[in-house]
Length: 246
Image 1 (cartoon, rainbow, N blue to C red):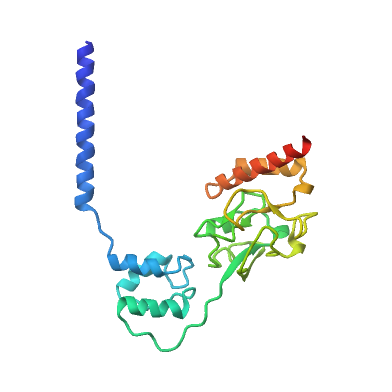
Image 2: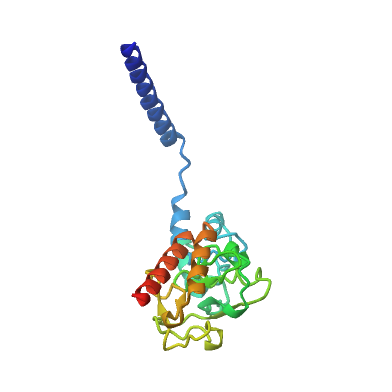
């Protein structure tokens, strides 16, 4: 009986390996190879995924360019990109110079945010964190300035502003009138261990139990877009609160 079970296990193991090899070989044989020119075009596109070119993202536009579409449809890329595409695709630079692109980022007026998730769902690069019925925050380092989050906002609390040349932990990127209660530009500090300028701001001097509870709820309700960041934020706030009580 034991030998029967052993041989059955061996046979199934061999079959599994054989099937795996067949699938791997089939994938290599029948794989659809990406056109190398498409990859080269996509590499120089700005990756804003804004859709201003008429396509849903940079890669679809790259494929269209490889098939002969116009090279001057990318607004964020501006004239500099037009020249690069002309060189890459061996085409003439179209007459008329494109306007210099604006380097913008979105900001949310926090006092007006209702936590509806619409901007999070619209963002093509996951640059917004937040949870349902809780404050949403733009991650400046990831925001491409595509403006796709502006229109879906039902309370119109998202503004586009010029991207600051340098954003540090005491940045005045947001108007002080929009800061949470008791917070000023001189007391803003980051409480999450994420890339520079990409965390929501909190004033640790005014944290209370309700704010810690809110962060905990945000952790529970976090969507797939931001669960890790919100969890990290909740942990940091709880850690800060614990440090004060000791």
